[in-house]
Image 1: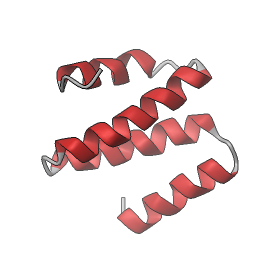
Image 2: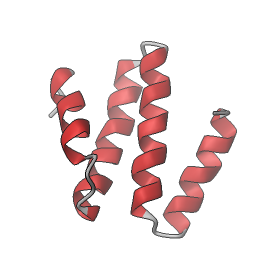
Image 3: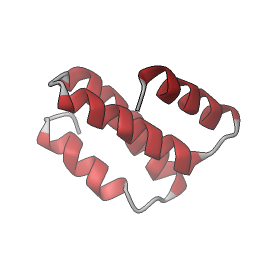
Image 4: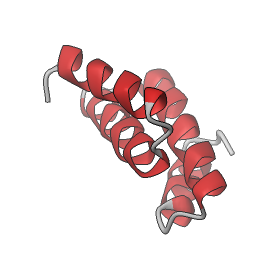
Length: 74
């Protein structure tokens, strides 16, 4: 996904207070950062995805937590 498009989608999800979209888009951003080995940025996005997942009671919470633990960031 194009970075500009992803940023637009993240802002839109915030504007609409859409936790499912926030989890999805922050996870995509984290995945993209991991793919280029930018682990600090990936963990930044993973943390945001995790927080929104916790607040929403989303099923992704455990997976996101495991990813953060694997990087020593939990």
